[in-house]
Length: 97
Image (cartoon, rainbow, N blue to C red; front, side, top):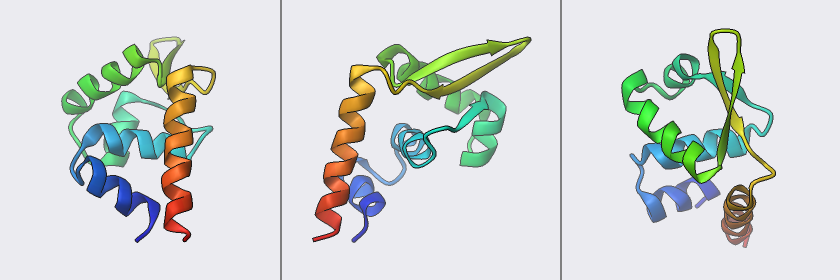
């Protein structure tokens, strides 16, 4: 069983928070606006908005304003983000055994 499958079993396969976390974990330099991220994840913009706001409040994601666009990206300096990344790496190492 690979890392993503283990995480889905742990937190639930349909958990949108987990899907967003994995998207940014797998693509560390990834930045996008809400519409682009919702299209890539295949969910409604309004559904994703609360999830992204939750992750911004925790400091996992940060907002960058560019003109009229609100861009989100991983905040790798944040302690919570570092702990989540370390946790996923731990799960990943278990997958390799």
